[in-house]
Length: 289
Image (cartoon, rainbow, N blue to C red; front, top):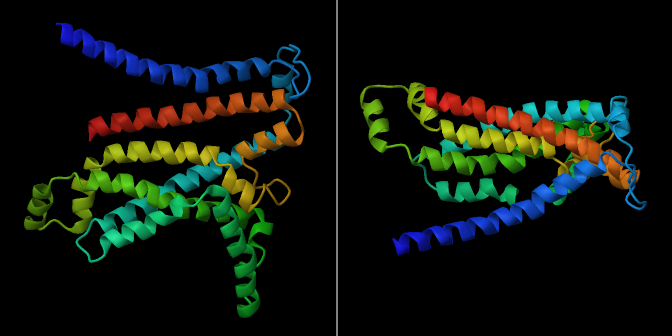
């Protein structure tokens, strides 16, 4: 009985450390940020309570709503692209092929590069290398990639896939390798095609991996900042500006901290709603499978 009490005491002690850290790092700053959203704080002056004036102002902020729409569009495309590429890579490196461990390492290397550095690398590729290809071949499609909102959008998607594809690959690998070999061997003996094996055996058994990866890629897609800053900086004409960059420029570029905090609160609600809804739907789907 005494040992059980000691175990419970240690359990609550370790849990308390995590809980206190969470309160200090997340909940207290969140509460302070929500309070500032009802003030006229600029980062320098003493904040004065002004009620809902800042929230009323937000409805006429066309740039914010454009950046939110752009972020939603980017998130939808990048979630599909990143998970498709990640799953394809996972299926490749879990087959019995030579050098699969080396391939895993090579595929994962882009994820080790910081977001700002990665953005500048791809900026060099899209601006200098693509323009050189355009001049050499005469193909105008390679010219001015980051100067056009449409190709700038796809440049952001390519960057996200190149960095995040291998990250989700690792999670898919963990679930694929946990599938019992007996099931796959039995399916092969029964003459099941590779597509049928993937659809009816592998896909249902790795459903939890989809829940995890969709949550990660969806939240990261909405919150993308450093790659957006380094690659396009929102250009041309703020047409490729995402919400995180819009909030940053409002706070530090225009010194409107309280107004930026409003955008952050709205952004938090939207991202949390989408992410939790996705998790709920996929969890139900896991049970059905």
